[in-house]
Amino acid sequence: MKVITKEEKLSIINENEKQKAIALIKEENKANNPLTLSVEVYGTLEPLDITFNGGDSSASAIKGAIDFAQMMEETTVTLWDINNINYEFDFDTATTIMASIAHKYRDEMFLRNEKIKALG
Image 1: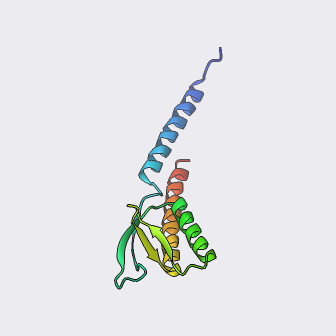
Image 2: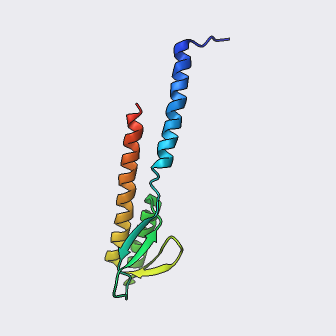
Image 3: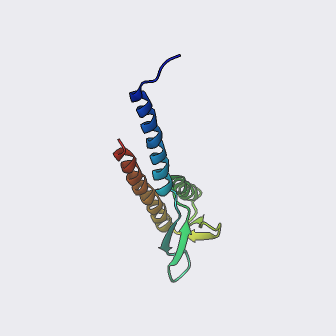
């Protein structure tokens, strides 16, 4: 049976505490939080405040929807909000929505990763 030294015990304790701190940082700094944007819905006169799912998968899904609609030679793209309500957007507005979600996700991930890095 191997005897664990005091330094090894401290290393294990420190690593466990670090993992707990990382889990807490990830919980407090979620990068997939919903994002509310004031956007122009196709055919409306005034912008609406619409909340979209956040995160890189949402941004990627919107990018895919835009690409598919353009490939099908459609003039607009339909996206849905966090409550699964469909809205029709022109491609410029849909691209702005996609970029806003991706930008927020990227910024939140950078911040979260810097906090984790600071733990050493």
